[in-house]
Length: 296
Image (tube, rainbow, N blue to C red):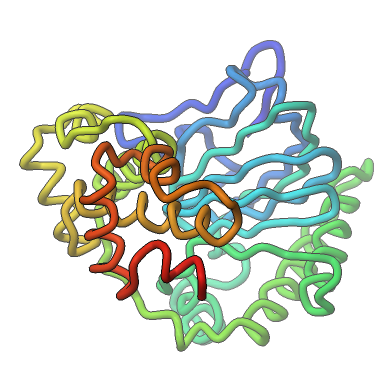
């Protein structure tokens, strides 16, 4: 990814796969130093790639939409984005993000013991991303080594072997501190289906307070209502409308705990037009009424 006078947007195909080549066949690694604010609409829009990605926030605060999650990252923190996971970065100011994108095969050949034992398990896990905070020792080690990788790239004579050495240190630190075995592998959707699912989910997350229909959700990725139902049911085991209602109820629960707003106002603010239906749905999901939830 890079933003300049000639390239201010992410270039993707119809599946949202990024079409830019990151490095070369012989050395599948690329370093970028970007400002999210300089991209079209101040965002690095939805895309995915088979390579993994590490991003460091050097300056500013940005929202990282990765898979089905949304994270706000501030200066001095970082994030790992797994292979084939759709993502988008948003900024409301200048946000400088040095980052690297590389093929895991750079670390070891795909038929080697190193790859099969240490690399493949993380790639195949349900981990969409990992965030790194400087106050957590092992995560701070990752951040320090990541900064060292950037430093190597910014020298006049780039040293590829030093880069790979540092990347292996980062990978080993992650492997030793993240319990990948507890991460249940997810059903592998096709890249296109994953893109469609994630875009529909993010549409719900952004517009849950509005009046949304199944047709509206399906329209975000130009599929039929039955196709949208099939995608949600196959990979999330829930219908789009049920996912929307559950998301609204979870948002309502947070408001009940964090604010003094009335139950009626919270129901209204989270997209429920009928407070009676809201209360019944809330008790069905949480086992208590909204008022009881607030007291607890």
